[in-house]
Image (cartoon, rainbow, N blue to C red; front, top):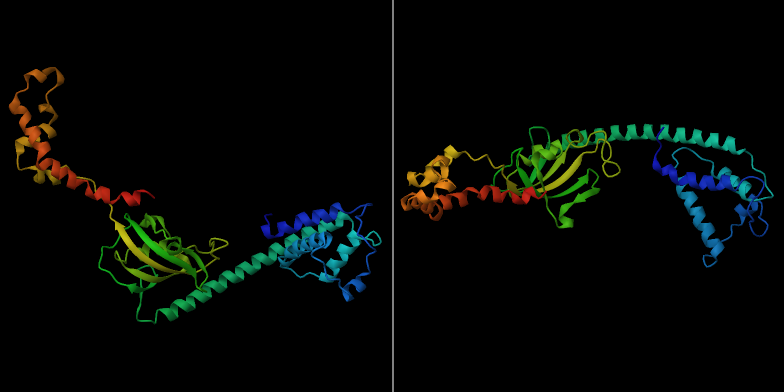
Length: 327
């Protein structure tokens, strides 16, 4: 069975206690007062004293582990067990094997309690987001995407809308419904670039109703985000995500170049294009001496005039897509 790491902090310490067991117990300095006396007159630790300092630190470490145990504990009994273990004048009430069995049972109880708590919390998150979305939909400024993402336009724009195959550049702030922020590209000062179809379904749906330059606040239901799995520890199970998204740039998908479509653009001198497009008319190396000056002129004209200019304009869309390709 796989247990949560939070209990891992306790196990090394318990190992230390077990290691201290047996016939040899550590020296504890001056005679240890009975438990009831210690409880009645607690001594204030002197943090300038090295023994007090590391003793207190060890107690803090144990306390942190105990605080993470999600089942009931009897703290006075726990403190008595520590005294029983370290004071040679006291007797422990369990053998090591019995203590180990008890700790295994504790682990099982912790796991069961955590599973029950997680299930209850996940259901609570679903109930809360359903209630919120129902109320939020009553706001006339709130719109809904085809799949159910609610959003409000903070800054409108008339740029192009991305398609699923396009890449985009965005700034965003991500938070939970209670306002807990989990990501912020604005604070990092670095917008994110990615293909529209490479992110969660709610983002894909939202981006395709936005326009380049637009900024919105959006509420993405958990079913269009990370669902019941969540992204521990940042995003709990069934968490609805609240984003502010600014669509800075759309890098539209560049279609394949159709030679038939660009033929009219290089048509003005039909003879000029022949050497470049018809390999049969290219002079082989063995026949270079036979090439006439008139045969070379069309090719030179093609390089210096229109065909070269057309080639330059043809690659602009590909160059425009380079920033997205960096991702």
